[in-house]
Length: 214
Image 1 (tube, one colour):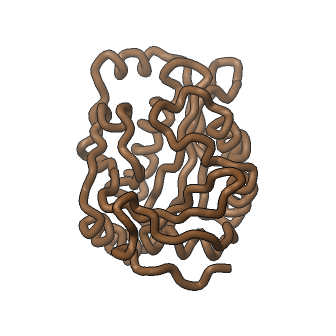
Image 2 (cartoon, one colour):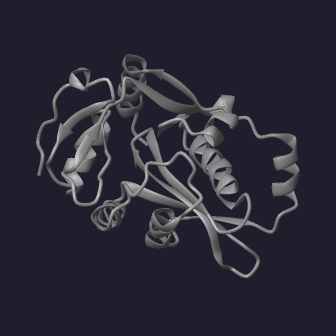
């Protein structure tokens, strides 16, 4: 178990802060509450990142295009939380549609670690089902007090992951959260209103979120 990470300001220009360690529950909890996230690559040591600029989605800045709103309103999608975490993370790992995503970072070790993180109450899945009760999209992330980090999304039917994200925002807002950490800015997230902020500003927001209990 890792008991201490270097200060985030020690990260290099790419955001790389540390190499090595493990993915135990307490290590992951320490990392997220310190503004750090893992980025594994199969066959290589474990990498930990704290980028100089961090992507966030401020919930009052969420932008859902009218065409998408109409589509989702008329869809047969239903939303569930934590019904099948393992299926969601495996869907994200297998997805070939994650443009701009971080390659093969959801390794078998990551799947096992985050399933345990889920069992301990820190990782959560947000799921989209169709009328046949089939899991067709979703996302998973980490929530500690009023801090939420969205990790990855997947879809098997058009717009299913967007539906999961929009419903997740509503779910989190009802619990008093005002923003989510999305780590890196993808074209999709940018279109939906996500933006990058300096690391110092992110760390301030993180500390404030962690002061508030749920």
